[in-house]
Length: 161
View: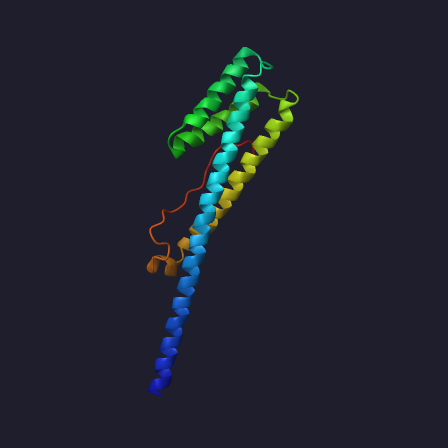
């Protein structure tokens, strides 16, 4: 009887250890996906800024619209922290909508760039929510399965969606 209780306890401990290892591996993969999605979002935002700067310098817009777009694109590219970047990227979106950039062939390219930013942000935020949900589970927090990785944050900006 004592041996069977001992084996049952060992089996339960092994199950907890296996679950912990599996969850820690899953968290590691999710954190990697968050970093990859963030890099992709940064790439799409940079592409959009570059396209807007190219449009502003092309001479097809009036000088005021060109200056507005160029300034907004520059501010978005040179923002230093996340909060400032979110504000500047939102301002760039508003500037794009305010200037009526429906000039061919720019309209298609700009529309595609805006859509890619929307998709990249949504993908990033979905992965962040999944990671945060897993990190909030009791066993994960009790046994510190997330290690020292910072809690990921969603990106909230106006992207035209």
